[in-house]
Length: 213
Image 1 (cartoon, helix red, strand yellow):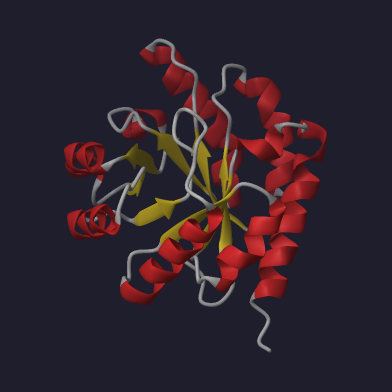
Image 2 (image 1 turned 180 degrees about the vertical axis):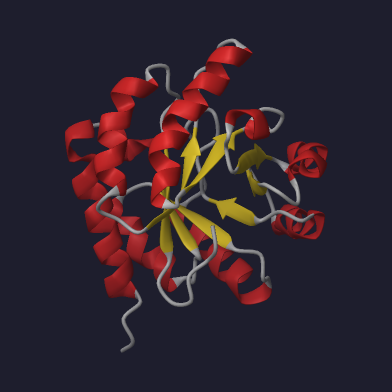
């Protein structure tokens, strides 16, 4: 999950999955049409064995395209499930898990409430920081605040920055703010038949936003 030199890459986020087999068909077609660096795999709560099996089934599709699979939480399962790492929400979760993930696996961090949190995540060794994703209640900061935080992070830190886009209209502004990755949330799967078209459109907008003027 290396950041690009010029054009940001996509970071796709799944809805909480129960039926990974059904979702896999739509996922594979979406991965085929965009420059996707990673997939944040969110799983509905169940027993540990089912979580591992669901992760493995998705990883088999994603990793063959050299795309990283990052588990949403569950850092203790990442290695056993064959995931490339885990995404932790908040500084406390990151610092508690990072020792078990690094150096072999990705440790990403979101849910950062302030610039100070972002600095702490970088100092702790996070492989990326994410800004703008919705909280568990579906709320997120105003988009201009997300843009500002992405630009601030990109201009100050070497830690790669992920900007969360809540729609296609936010993709290009995040690219211009110098996000290393642009995350597309579970909104792209609302109509699974058009997920691939949405990913293709987002890839085109990233390219257009970073063409030298």
